[in-house]
Amino acid sequence: MPSHRSTPSASLAPSCRRSRRVAMRTLAAAFIVPALPLSAQVRMALATAINRTARFRALSQRAAKAYGQLHLGVVPERARDVLGHTRKQVLAGFEEMDGQAWPPEVARQLQDVRRSADRLDALLGQAPSKEGFAAVSAQSDQMMAAAHAATEALEKLAQAPTARLVNTAGRQRMLSQRLAKNYELMAAGLDGRAVREQMAGDAEEFQRALAQLAKAPISTPAIRQALEQGQAQWVFFDAALKRQPDARGLDNVATTSERLLELMDSLTALYEVALRDVLG
Image 1 (cartoon, rainbow, N blue to C red):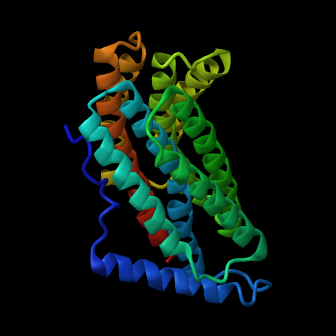
Image 2: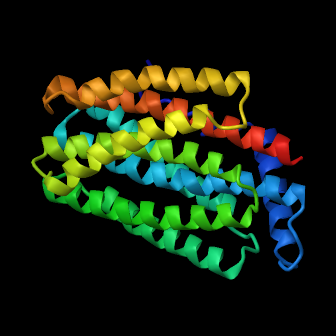
Image 3: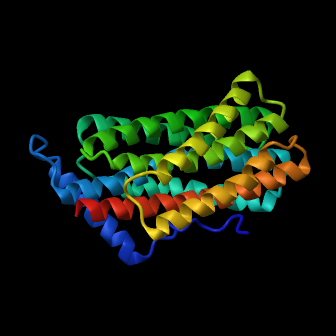
């Protein structure tokens, strides 16, 4: 089972990168005349932008999770790889979003995400400690909240109800990582009522969202297969989360959360492609 290799969309082929840059340029051009209805091409570009911005939510939590692993001594070599890779993904994500003529409100929100990400990155560079983990966790939540606001704004711009599918599937990535991070907070003695309630709520939301996606009008054989794989992996992840946070539980949560992230990232990409096909 993969533990620290890149998720499917993390190592983009050159042709894929070029197509995404073209999509972003198309999107930017459309905002020069915002009063006009968005064309299908622009809405397709927005599907890509939603996926990109939504990924910052998951990356914030994944970085905090990896930092927590280092503090707790949970497969530290793997955790260092995950942390280093995640920090690079954040930088690459901003490079993809930079230089675009976003509407003022979206541009402001993306700036908020970047400022929050910079503060998180500074904390991640410090030696792992209990106090550091608490600070990293809090800052990762601030970055996540800023990224969520930007994602919601882009979804509204898309003018297509099916854009919600990309956002929902993308949020599953974040939930998998926040659940794992909160499990580590429990192990570190940093949990409280709020953390436990959030874990319970996130677990319910994850299962509810899987059911909603399975009933969505947009579906393909690949999407159905990804949903089935995600449901199967959730069973393993949920079982790991229900263990007391001992050494075995921490290792299982770290491993299964990475696999679930990979599956949900693939699912989000499939919804993005399906949405582009519908709008094209």
